[in-house]
Length: 77
Image (cartoon, rainbow, N blue to C red; front, side, top):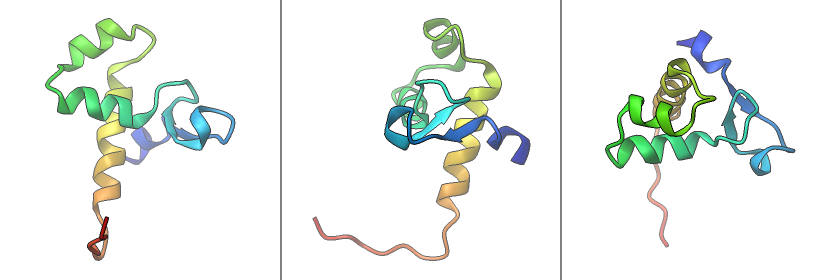
């Protein structure tokens, strides 16, 4: 999994510093939103031909790592 995470980059000059895939203008949140909407890996790769299967897996690994927190606080909106 750590090898996949090397595909996730943080660069203040790309997408306002949000986590992106391989320093390209594909934010991790975009890929996660596409997956959450029901798109398959194949559909995402067809729509974004410069992406690779490992990029999608890297986004999932990144999200899994973020979900491993010691505690969660409720935030009032």
